[in-house]
Length: 437
View 1 (cartoon, rainbow, N blue to C red):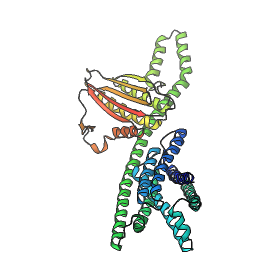
View 2 (cartoon, rainbow, N blue to C red):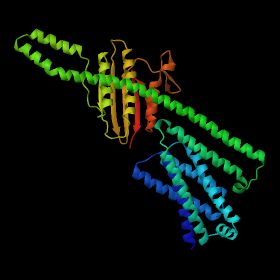
View 3 (cartoon, rainbow, N blue to C red):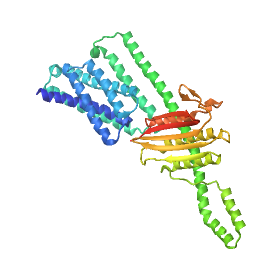
């Protein structure tokens, strides 16, 4: 029977980690694709449950080492499977383990008060059928509570803009409640009896840590929102330019038949001069340019074509080499952010060069295994100004400039990528590497 009881203990621990990860899945995004996520989810839960069972074999009652192990590995498991901050997963783990402990202690207390002390002693003293029945009952109750909590979290539709803030609040509230419970029950959990002053000091420290983290996270969320707003404004400007170019091309194509008919009539009447003048008016009055299919993403192709034409109109030679994989999962908004900022910086650097020097921009986009490399190289007579390895703007009003490269860096980090630069032989090169699945 020992093997069966150990298996029951493992199932109980397995259910506990599954329930915790289910809560995390409700408020966080997965790290992997669906099939791989499920496989890792089950394997990780099974492995963590083995550790819990090994500790429970030493002491079947509530054990401090088991509690510490559960808090840490639950948070680590969430960090592996889901996108988020370890400290928030840790807060949530503290609250969740405190909930499990509270359920166990409350059930034991109720059984003791109702004259079932002998049953409690059998449950805590060793493996038995009554312990199996107790574990099954408790786990069913915990499953019900967690399912109810997940339903409430899903029902509360969290706007994407406020999701990080809301997740932080949920983790901090549950973690604070769990920490307070642990402090109050310190004598039972860790064998330390605290007086009133020690309890209040512990609670104050817990709340101070949580409050400090909350304000730091709130400031970070505000910065993320400001970055998003700047990026949207920047992209809106480029979308409008692309839209104008598209409309200009559409008008040109719509009128092309009439223009060709008129030129054909001029030529038929041997009016070559009039035909040339009319053709010159068409070319001179139109600012439209061809939109090449570089990436297959309409907005990105508009930006590349627009920036290339802008550079050429200012005497800059532009070379473009693009190999962009379809359905790579890179958000077009992030791709446009990178291309716009790097192209604008390259054009600005080339325009500053003396007319007699070579002005050249080379855009290269390549796929290497699971990485996309975006490289823009431009002619430059001087090396960039850097501080602690970071490029700083050379403009006088630094508070309103220098955001472009920060936006590029943020877009790269979103895909676990990096941004770096190089200057040699009068050529400045920006490299952005993005990881995709």
